[in-house]
Each structure stands twice: as structure tokens, then as C-alpha cells.
Length: 497
Ligand code: BES
Ligand code: ZN
Ligand code: ZN
Image 1: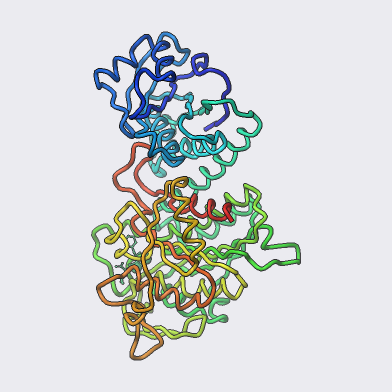
Image 2 (image 1 turned 45 degrees about the vertical axis):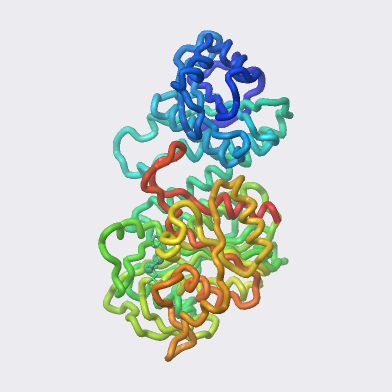
């Protein structure tokens, strides 16, 4: 999709569809709607007055061949209340417009940005939303792919804004949008295609093109280092484990290596069968996306590199397949982690925390001054927060506050859960330093307490994105399937530092 800035009056722009957001609390008599109504021959006023179109969030109403416009059709999209409006909503409305355009094979659309003070931010999120909406999860359909794609998306800003600057903001939106879609594709890929090895290869391709430095650690090196928690998970699979190490140019340096200001760690279980603690078969296919945290880290790193970040950041993605093979780890097995702490593995389906534990310690060894990890870690988090917010836990107060503030812009919901020390007792083991599961209760928190054991004193945030990685219902602004959750959150956090 080609995305560009459009200057001038919306009346004079030729396209298949003009997308015009309308607020619930704006009256048909407002100057903006009056002039639109005039161009549309009175049809806007009558649609609003008759309630044929109610501008509630995501509602749509379409007018063909509006006489006073050069657009072939006009699409009004409900934007909800002006007082609740955020950049995240503008992104979703741009996306809702693009999805509607797709369904009517409208290849060229113009989007009018309204309601956001900063033209810069408006242009960026509109570009992100358009790319997000133009994406389809139909990777393996052999017919009719791409034919609905919107080919040309032009962004018109509702106020005077410098052209050059807007072009740059749009470029930023494109980088973030494309990186998000890259992460979605990785999570949508079935596990027979996207094995740990293939994930690493795809990362090398995409990452080096973006200017990142990448390295893949193989099993023998992990064995030498003693990453036995990670290795315990991959034992049951015929697919070899990989540890992907991704660095921004500032972290990779030219001989003059700088300590990473941030370590980003993403869970990369390319398929989670549960292992010997086998999962029930219902919805087991969703576990192909158990590497969504890893995909988010990789996507964010690609975006940051393309945006020219000067921050030294290291991304670590432990990649494994969790399978119940003949040599698989068994409940009750004890392993010594990379850090040296011993773990009694009670449940082989609590594998994410095992691979994350060794990656967390590796980030610390590399000298990361702060750490963020992102993982589809627990079903308990889905029970607690549903598909609306990811669980956020950790010791880095400043990052947690910043992340929470960013939600209005990223549109990715985060909600903090407590991790006070009273929860630690749930993972005490009789035989080892800790066990890998707690009891029935507060499962998202006891998982975080387990991870905390491996971060020790480094300021750390943990995002549990189970429940956010896949969307089974579809949204007005997105297809069903992988969401790429976390890419925007990570990019925005790194940029706000
Ligand atoms: N990958 C799952 C968590 C998950 C569940 C992600 C649902 C997305 C949707 C994780 O590895 C897991 O199986 N966790 C167990 C932990 C339990 C054994 C303590 C769970 O949540 O049931
Ligand atoms: Zn599991
Ligand atoms: Zn898992």
C-alpha cells in the first residue's frame, strides 16, 4: 500500500472513497459537518437527523456519488465522544475505513484526520492503522489473495501543517505498521513452517536488512553455558533450540561495544503442546502463536532500527518447541538454571518461564541496565483480564507508569497486577530452590514471581500477553488472527526514554 500526505481541500481530491470521522457529540450544524453536508447535497444532515447514521464508535454510513465531492463515495465513520478521543481511536477509525474500502474493492482512499491536536501524531497513527487494517491472515489461501487491497491511502490533515514534517511522520507510521504486520505474520505461521530454526532464519533476513546485528546461539553453546532450564523445554522435540540475539547498531558498536540500556526478552515457543503435561486438544492449535512475545520483540527491534534509534538495545528471543518426546522433561525433574538456581519442574506446560529465566539471566550478563520481557505466559492472565488488557508486573516503577500512560496512543491495553513478596511462597520447592508452578490461584502473578528470581536487582517489567496475541472475533479495523500486540508498546517505550 502506498501511503502519502495529501494537501488541500477534501472536496477537490479524486479517489474511490473519502473517509470522514464524525463525533457523537458534534451536531449536524457544526461548521465542519455543515460544509460536508453542503458538498453531499444535504444527505449528511438527513442521515444524522433520521438516525440512519449514529456516530457511535466504529459505526459506518456510506454515500455513493456525492455530487459536490470528487470522491466516488463518502464514508462516515463514527468516532465516539470527542471527550474520549485518543490517538489510538484515530488509528482504529482509519483502520475501520480501510476495512470498509477493502470490502467494496475501493483501491484508492483518502482519510481526513480529525480530532487530534498534533498533526504529526495524527498522521503517524493514521498510517499505522491503514497498514494494520489492510493486512489479511490468509497466508496459505491459494485464491483471491490481495485483490481487495487498498493500493493508495492518502492522509489529509484537518489543519495547516508543514508538508515535509508530515511526510516524515507518515514514514514513521509506515515503519511501525509494517513491523507490526511482520510480527503478525510470524505468529500466524503454522508451527510446521515456523520452527525455531525458521524463526531464526526469518529474523536474520528481516533484521539484517533493517540494519540490526544478529546472532543465533546453537544448542552446544547453550550446553556449555549451562542454560539447562531452556534446554529442559526443548528436550522433547526433534527441532533444535535457538537463542536469537538481536542488537541495535549502538549496542553492537564497532568494536566499541556499549552496555545495553535495555534488554528486551520475548518468549519464542513455536509450538506449545504442553510437553508430558500435555494440553487438552481443544484450541491447542492456538499454541502456534506461543512465540508472539518473541515476534513482538523482533518486530519492535526492526522498527527501531529503521527509525534510526541511537539507543543501545539488545533483544533476546529464546526459541524452542515444547513437545512430549521420549527424552522429554518429566514432572518432578530438577534442573540447574543458567543463573545457578535450581528448579523443580512440576508441570512441563509451564515452559515459558523456564526459557525466559535463562534469557533473563543472559540479558543481565550482557550488562542490560533495565529489562522488559513479553510472553504469552499464563492462561490465568486471560482469566483475570480477558482479551482487553495484558498483565503488567515488575519492579521498574518508572517504566510501568510510562507504559500505562502510553496506552492512549498505542491502543494496546496494559493493566498492572501486584507482585508483593507474599506470593513468593507459592513457588517454594521441597527439593530445589523453587518449583515452576504455584497452586491454582494468582497464576499470572506466581509466574511473574518465578521470573523475578532471575532479574534480581535489575529494574524489570513483565508483560503477560496471553489472550492478546490472537483475536478470534475480528474487529472493525482488523482481520482475525495474530494481533502483533506489543510492537507499538515497545517502540513507544523506547522512544519515550
Ligand atoms: N502458552 C501457555 C499460556 C497460554 C494460555 C497462552 C492461553 C495463550 C493462551 C503457557 O505455556 C501455559 O501453558 N501455561 C500454563 C501454566 C500452568 C501449567 C501453571 C497455563 O496457563 O495453564
Ligand atoms: Zn505451556
Ligand atoms: Zn507456552
